Length: 335
Image 1 (cartoon, rainbow, N blue to C red):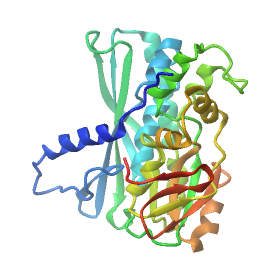
Image 2 (spheres, one colour; image 1 turned 90 degrees about the horizontal axis):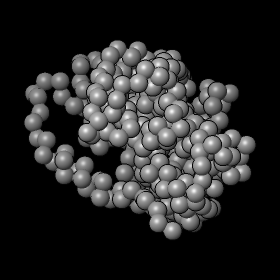
Image 3 (cartoon, one colour; image 1 turned 45 degrees about the horizontal axis):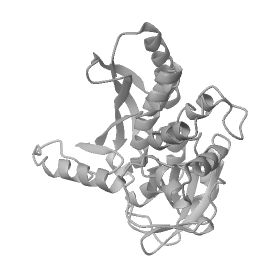
Image 4 (cartoon, rainbow, N blue to C red; image 1 turned 60 degrees about the horizontal axis):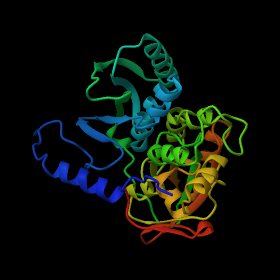
């Protein structure tokens, strides 16, 4: 069966080639962290500003095909703020960018509802943006945003302190979040599944399952930071579990993962995908990863477990890569 899977290696090479051309740097307001992390930090003296830019991707095609745009704004907020908090930054403001083939006030209303909900959950102000009508460029709609956050420089979480014996915790995802939809849509198409029918093994429709909004972890993470010395965090987006080594090159042993939700198992079966492919494309239920030392376990769990499903999924060892013994998955490198 034909299926579309993003070539992450080629994508990485494209980004690397692009970044190598950008050599200019100001002498003031320097960048604190290297390019390629989850967020960018600009030095402002005692503080640093975090900057993020991300979009919803081809999930918007499903929104367009079902005329359901009311949750896409939540996704757009989530994709930005969940990256910002990986260094401990508190997102405070956001600019959106929406490009369409034509004006439609109902789409505007639905999008606004989602952005408002996302902003409320993440506690950010949407302070402006840009709307472009580009029918020659966009077939349906494209949505992205840029977020700005703040953090005291002495509170920045870099991942450098991650060490042998640390614990890996995962906060559960709300489903697919906003990644892997090129593969998802191809699987749906190849199996002649309609968006208004019941998703296999679920009482919800296919559209309901696939448009489930991305979970936002801002408040839980910021509260945990105030009580627990978090060593590293990773937002599990494009590239799946391979996002984890972006914190630090160590060996991450995941031997107690969340059981994959029905949506992942059904897509795996319908698309004839291996576990290796699934963990490289999707979050597999692990939406956000937190690394702490064993002594901080109780305080961390007491802070977040009644607010979002959370689980100790493994530990850190000296070495390199990711192993998930239960599914015979072993990966090296990161995206």
